[in-house]
Image (cartoon, rainbow, N blue to C red; front, side, top):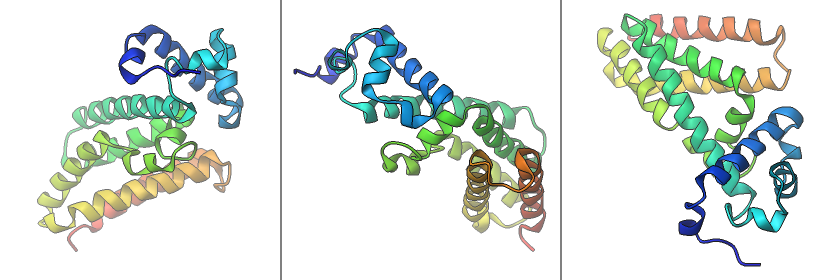
Length: 197
């Protein structure tokens, strides 16, 4: 079986879009364990070998989904930050956007953070959205004369968000998503208030 080169695969954007959408829908409906090359191929009406004309393997499909998720998350974080006034409120809104994205798109969140597929995607989980959150954290830190704590603030809050999200998605957080969100946002507020003390 001859697989398409990356240059050849780029010539079929509509079919690639259909394959990526099929993988995402399968994951949303049945979980990531149901997403196989054979299942995705069946969903789009081709053979498994036919799918290799567009993606070299399942991880390539997951990588395309992760990239799409990172762009979507970036847009949501940027909108949330831009719509808020005040440094602390912008940071809180950006982190709340990450939370909401994960609740609305659990299948994308999972693939973005390496919970399925190639674990190397974990480092790029938030990708460009992290730069927006880091800038919001820098604005908060500057107002509190604590600029040296910018990275600690943004990194710890994103890590906390991830922990709350994963426990919630696993159905393991006592009190469910509503309580987890409330506790996470209270933690954000506490960290912002405590900065520079």
